[in-house]
Length: 488
Ligand code: ADP
Image (cartoon, rainbow, N blue to C red; front, side, top):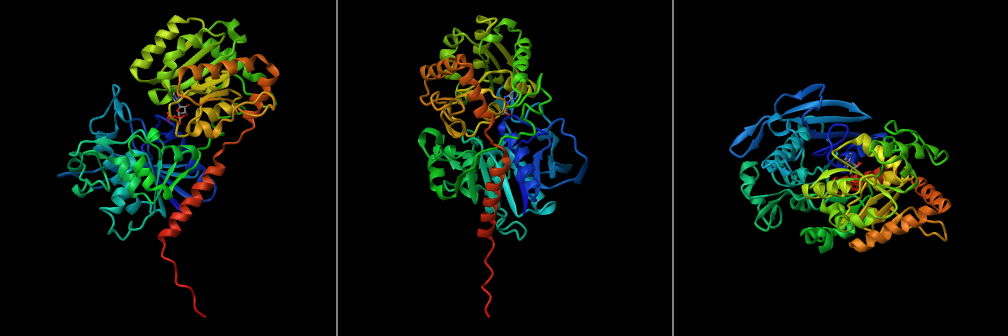
């Protein structure tokens, strides 16, 4: 099968979150299964390309045309990469935001990107399946069924749309349709219209052949008002076409046995290296050497409501009065950055904070911490808890979305389970889960058991990629008219 991924970000070229990890690992896993896979990404600042495949596409945008080039980024891990090269739109400091706010022309930028991706599917690399990701590419299925519905080359091309986070809609004023050269007829309740505004994600949910999301639990949750962000009705209408497929962890990048970022390699058989990683991490955050005896909690996150920082902010001080240390890495909402800075300065010697995006440090936290905290309000899948399990770093999570699907509560009597979970979105519940973890930590034997249970889990991409392949196959079969039965 020829599968064309269209995504606003993907490693090793661009990343703001877990989507980028997925768009690196899933194509790689599909290619390893023998599929022919290509990925279309925007050419952001710093992306190197090898050749220009199409010097100029003509993309209608309102009453003008834009002329992005298509660049070839060569083949990596068996996957072909193409970039939509429009410097005015994409050669910027960041991917989506400037000084904490969205770029005002995001609607136009990603309309252009989606249209260019469809032109690539026509002119450069013709797929059997097109697989789009998040609101930035939601117009691909919309346009396939609208402007391109009569195109003999693209007509009937099955579109799979993966929602990595239903909380981000791509919501714009109505004028974006004219500015982005989108048909006014799309401003309908059956397509992009959402409370008098234009909602790209909604259009994608309605137009895609199949909708996938990144864990089975989240697939159910997004049909409820609590997790639906106003789109639960739309998702429910398409319930028969919604599938939850758990993201995998790419163990070629995230495994303490082969991780070059960490101070000492280790595995379930030789866990000694983990203690060295802890010392290294304490040193990195200038926490006292003697605190090595205390349990160390790690956080790597976007500092946002979604990730549970409002909850954390309620109990942070109380948490830090426990016999523990805490290191946190992340960026996000200024109010949470301020709060965490204040907390760290209030608990010198117990808390280390790094505001920023630092992949190497993320690896060192996974390796050096004893526990990993993810108190998310909602979590479509979450990757860090899966990485944590592999690193023998016990996850403490809220039981939601992929966190609930991947972490099993530890039962001291049976010795089964991989982490600690709490259900209520409540500071007391968070504290209680941490306190339970601290108690188990005091029992070295039980803790070792818990670590080993987690390290033995396999969340590699193999099984999930096979599920996607089955879905593509089903989408393809549904589109191909059946040959008449042979008569004899
Ligand atoms: P989301 O996509 O919602 O942010 P995920 O858990 O799915 O959350 O994926 C987050 C990914 O981004 C993980 O690979 C995590 O290690 C990484 N990450 C998040 N924040 C940082 C940071 N400040 N520095 C380095 N890596 C980060």
